[in-house]
Length: 156
Image (cartoon, rainbow, N blue to C red):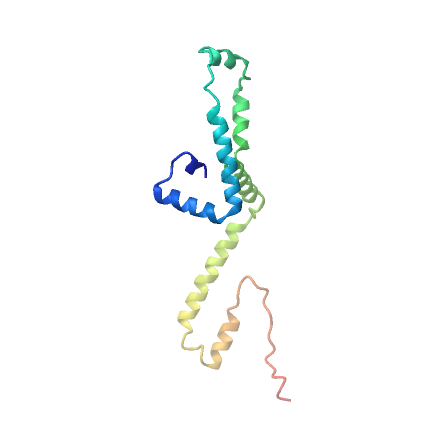
């Protein structure tokens, strides 16, 4: 609406805003209020300002120290979010680091290599009864070995 009052709209945009104002009573009241404010401010004359006014004002303004300027940066939301993310990353890297993790990664890599080698060696045995025994013989090194009973409970 202020763009309409300031003649900043193209003719088509101004016409569409005017059409809306004719159909919407709430916007029409708001536009009338803005128009009245524009008329009042238009009646005011320009103020005569002394040329040295700014020179008299600036000494009275509080000067910001370096630390005041530095801390004023933290009032911005994007700075707060960035600092929070960095603190969280530092926290996670320090407190979630597990000693011996490199050894576990090595053992896991060896396990994967062993599984791939076994898979290649025993591919033909997987469909026979012997293949079941081969798979039991080479178990996961990260799991405690479990002994299986060879007795069939259904044949008694």
